[in-house]
View (cartoon, rainbow over the protein chains, first blue to last red):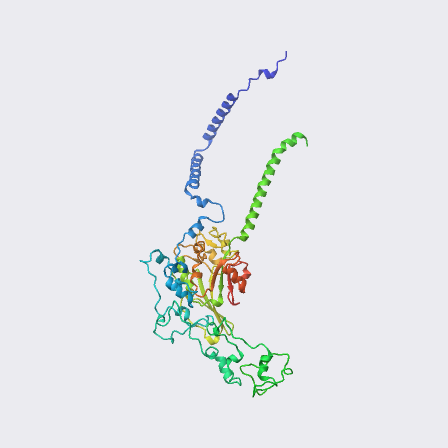
Length: 277
Length: 248
């Protein structure tokens, strides 16, 4: 009988196999390790130490916030937000200084923050008894805003400190919490001097400015925002210069024929109307 | 393809499908996030040139609020004085950030026009300073404010060079870049930036650009608005009214 070769084979034993493999592997490792030159083995130790150090630094020493992924460190925003505040705003001042606030709210300085003049108020609010804010009393402070400067907007109240009551502190005449409006000019010439000088030489010298310009009273206080009117039609000039008008001694033209396509002031400057032509 | 082959490839197909699903979800989340940021707060500032009296209270307040070094050449905000002469030449003065005494070098009769221009960090939508930062120390918050992380900043001053508006300086003590934060620590608590708070003529206006009726939106609605160096496509969030063409 032919023997089956499979019967002669030893039955497969997992334990034995793994033991053998493990033993072989260990021996192989041992021989391989002993084959490695000594200097390389030392280097390997150093390498292992290095890797371990890097791992320890990454895992334990670097703070977790630096490891956050993203375009920026999120705690940077927190540190920005935790910065102390110095200027508190008008509302907090009004809680105690309600009388001054009420005065100021009605005056020309109503848009002005308390801290613009008195400085940052946080420390004063935290400890009102100890920290007292200073008030500028000297003559050099108000001109920071109110001295004349050609770059400042027209209509903003400005003075020349050299000639405006020299040596007198501003607060002796003006209450900074409720500054009086500047004395309004009685005559238009106070501001519109160039026009006044021109009109003085012209035939319109007898006319008052308000003949042609209806001027609201507020224009004297708020010259840039409340503006006087100007004539808009030919009929306005015709009141004095039409052939059939009742005013005496004025040059007459036939309003319907004379330069009908144009407004009068396109040819005649009203503040200096020519007479001979 | 027989059945055996097909069954062999099933695991591969399933894992591929899974990957596609993860990717598409991420893409969707990205889109949702982006469209959501359109309605978010974007802080900005308006500056009305015709209201500015050049008193430099803003410069003083900014230094006090943000502990800006006292030397007269470190500023987070400053006020320039423009004098345009009758021969069309331009003189720009900025003595101590505008807080110093103004020395009149141009006679008034030689002057065509003159005005003050307050300047600060423009908090650009496309900030060149953030692009050049090699360590990612300059970044934009989600409300559109450009901040400097002074713990990351290495003080290489690339950003100082890159800013087209000259808004940055290197802090002499910390040796890091520093600039206007639009008083981030104040506005997040509902206060106004210090410069806006003290401005005596309300030339400075602060608000949220995306709001329906913030003071800034009203200003942009009512006035003719211009920004500095629009050609650079930085999209500044500091808006000027009545800005003269000579202002660079």
